[in-house]
Image (cartoon, rainbow, N blue to C red; front, side, top):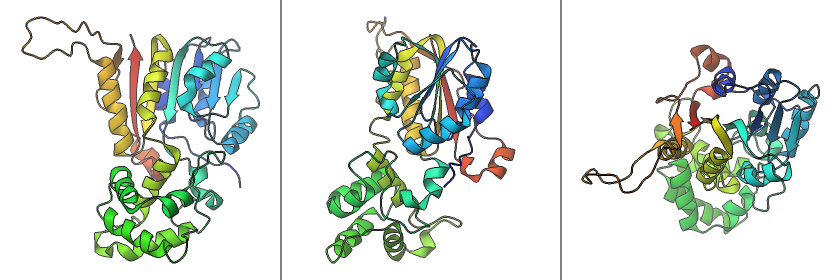
Length: 310
């Protein structure tokens, strides 16, 4: 299957980096290479770009797309390892970085990857097929309490307990092996009248399992802090989120980095000596244009937040 992915907020996110043609930049989520291609077009041969992705299929597709550029370093790794990635490439700092969070269109559309609640395939959902835990293990080995917590915390699913109980009941008879089985199970449990028009009953549950399998929220805050720490002064970090849970983490982390004194208001003078480390470039997130949402429906929930290191 061809690796197809439409980059969301492409111009807005790359423009936000204020590219220095001779700088060092990183794309934490290389995907189909759209953001990286635009960054590379703005770099001179002296500039360096690092493309990072957990998915080897994404790396291979990007290599084909970006074969005309010689100043890119490919890293088949998790972006949470940015410190070691820079170290092994003898790079000391970044002049900008972009993170396009979540799952790619290719991963969703390739049914064999087991992300889709519409197409039937083996339960998987791993962004890196090298990872040991897949959706199958989550669905068939986690306790009822663990499943309930995941569905509620990561999917904001109000029928979490009912869905978890049904999973335990059915898997006691036979393991739940496919996305189709799981999708049908959720559809059987959730009252149809509670499902938003145009949505799917299993959407929140699949999102929750995917987040659990890939540790998407668990590592996010520390990854944002590590990328920010890796920035040179005046460099920027641009992050695109697609749902409220990850956006809340990014927003709060940026706020903490931009915060100065943390002393109680009742203190007459500052004793914490805490200084702002960054400046939030836009108080409100940048949203996709109406035109973009019309040709790429998956961009509708996207939010771009940008911070500049002091």
